[in-house]
Image (spheres, one colour):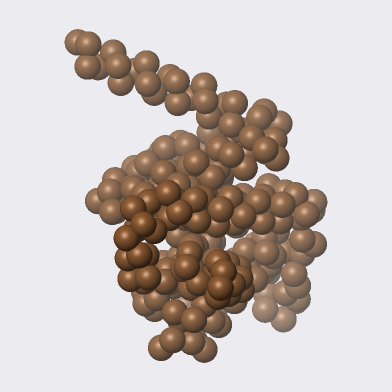
Length: 254
């Protein structure tokens, strides 16, 4: 049984390494950073006052996306989220996406990183840039800047917003014919998964969900991200959202 579990893990690891190398690197860096700076992650986190003059600690922008969370539980949950939502999205852009044979054995197979997709890297970098600029604009337009209380803001990681952006982009691009199992007994179309996850979380992540959605729409439109069948992702999502709006409106009119 232990050997079977080991082979299953190695097959999964090899599949992610081959089809989603960037995601695997993110998971590795996130876990490594958490292990190294477990008691002082604040030095790597985002803070609008610290990345602008006179401090100009610009390194906080990329590092704030690499810090998956403050607690070990957060890091584990977000590493899992990278595997479940971002890895499939990256695999769509893999030039030689492939599955691992069922007769895989530890001795026969060698684990190697697959080629990195420049298109996916563009999506990732553009998402990070949009999130960073948006956070700065939100803080600069808030009352905290006028009162000076912005200094009291605790440094935070920007990864949760990126996680939701990747989840929304995956939901927009995934094949709607392939349903996703939630809580072992409910099957949903991919486009409904981000909303289901929001409800399951008790709406505690609604701000990150909305920011992630905004990021996904802007990045998807700017880079003309395509769905699995070549259809523009944002255009398709607009049609689906409009259908939701019409249906909800009818329910209230009954």
